[in-house]
Length: 182
Image 1 (cartoon, rainbow, N blue to C red):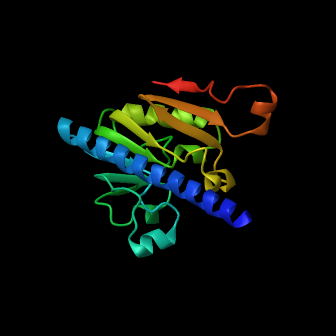
Image 2: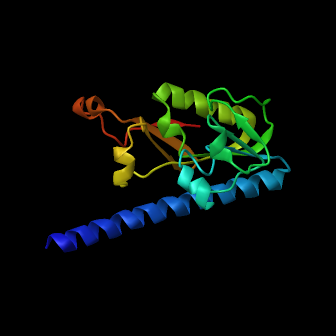
């Protein structure tokens, strides 16, 4: 019985991971297509290799580099045409410089909802459109990563942010009552 439970759990987590991969690629491609359609560069926030040296070593990029790749670690953007080491809350580009910005598995690492809102406003300032991908709440790995402070989900062009704190649930706050950012 325990063997079947492990197999079922593994299949479920594999499906969750494949869903995250598909979401990332779909949103990256949408951001790339939009940027090209308006004749502006694409900003990628959160390098395609993240903080995983094996991913870089094996050439397993999670998504493309865009025209400009911004991350707090230069190694996350290995191979990008232009690498900018900066914080997403202070993007060093002028207003409207990019056609699109794609933030992949970045915003959930910010320490608070206020920081996330600041980052999104910065991305909206420098890009015509913003696309966001983040880990699924169904991912056990996402729950175990100590650097994940927020749950961030984009649905229908609206970004929802929830702090990952036990006291938000203890206070009776419904996790679906997230703040929408436009």
